[in-house]
Amino acid sequence: MLRLDDGKANAVGHDTLAAVDAALDDAEQSAGALMITGREGRFSAGFDLSVIGGNPDAARELVAAGARTAARIYGAQIPVVAACNGHALAFGAILLLASDVRIGADVDAKIGLTEVAIGMPLPIFAIELARDRLSPRHFTAATALATAYAPAGAAEAGYLDEVVGADDLHDIALARASALAAHVRRTAFGLTRRTARQQTIDHILSTLDDDLTSFGALD
Image (cartoon, helix red, strand yellow):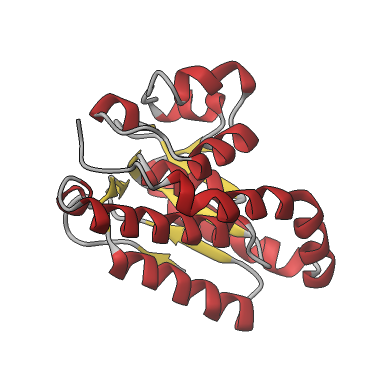
């Protein structure tokens, strides 16, 4: 299990991405599933805005690193379960889109791709993950219109698979990860994963550098 907790909003910087990559390395070697969670009221508020709103080269570097981590979760050779404790915005929502099973707490929280609302265009990797995981009926609202959903609405839109009581979230998500680890055969899972997702992953990674050339500070 990986718990994101910086004591604040769980903003994502290079250290967080490195921790996710390391947890995936360990889980793929020694476990049959990985659970990612946050802290009470916060899953992740997205990329660290002190980086994103600053030097454009540093912003592009962080977004590119985040895209590669998201693609790695999306293409992981084991199932990934996300236990969403609260707010999941921007890259926090992308982490949900990249995970296989998304369970959210029934709390006062907002979940969504809010980049357009703060003057940032959604990059290709976010669009492609949203296209795959979100309900087509909600795709435009969730992407171009930057809609942020309460947990029940996020489940309808496709960010979450189910919403449970906050006190039950950890145990339910951990039980789901354990059940998947016992149930899913790794070789069959990996081959099916490659067939279903490798084309999208290849597109994300091959277009990433060009897509981010115009990415800069906030409007």
